[in-house]
Length: 126
Image (tube, rainbow, N blue to C red; front, side, top):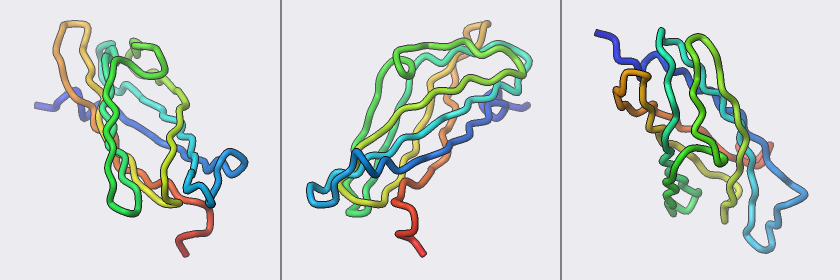
């Protein structure tokens, strides 16, 4: 049996926000754009999110809450939902990972895993 979670594809694009960052203040801002693609045959609604953000010092922070950017979107079959957000870290390199709590039209709850992705100042990792 195929889990519906495996029918949710998540793509991530990241960007370093140099003008809003300050190395002297150990404040590095990054934006990320998430695209959630529903490859299943049923609509799914994104109910909540759970992020784990780890900087290059190994410091972890967690973010949990309802929806994303103030929305709890329903994603129809074979369509995508996209949003952008951001985070601040104290180091120029870090990672984010997590999951979305989702529910099908039939009420089946499941987690869609957000693959680990790197946040890094361009050119810092050669």
